[in-house]
Image 1: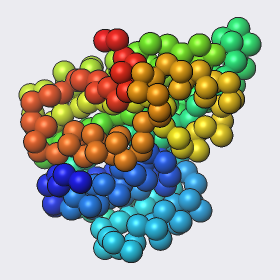
Image 2: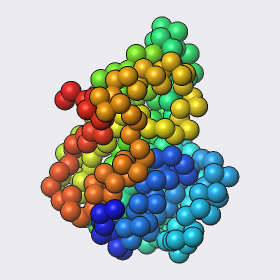
Image 3: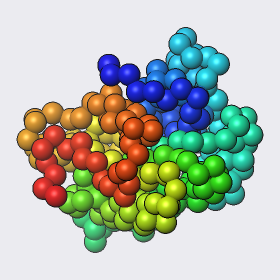
Image 4: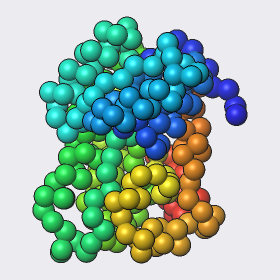
Length: 252
């Protein structure tokens, strides 16, 4: 593993109790950062913190947060900044897949839920974190988008639309903060084998795999490695970019 220097940096990872978020948290801890895990599942948070405490007990905080609730996010941001002394890094990872059905059959309530979690939640967290970064004239934000947001995935209209929105949001925020040492980027990975697969059909999983030239799903550790560099001081120029981890699928 390449060593990324994040010593002294204070990070927030949403959806940090499992899957990509947990792997990113582990990589940031290994690189010297202090990390606050945000998740809406209190039991998963407790389990994740116990798992991570073997190597970095003094560098882990946790917060039960509903990213779809701006008030919950605002309280969490304030509490986290107080406990850690500030926030330098924000990784917006919390997300859901939603149903895999044709758009004309997509339940309205499911559409709204996916947009609320996958797009609105990212905005609410950025809105809470950016002022702190502007005040200290430094920050790194990584929003987790998806290859679906670049290409559009059939039978996943809400997820594709939300992730496309995340990419555009990232580019907008990057331009607003480019006058300071703040980088706002996103990653657009292919599918990874996490619990999100429990939300989608096997047919859809097979379809996603068939689209990846490498012939396998991305590993969460590979995503974490990319994120670790993106949130480091070494990433001092690139902002407003979508970093692909698509195994060759992305065409632009």
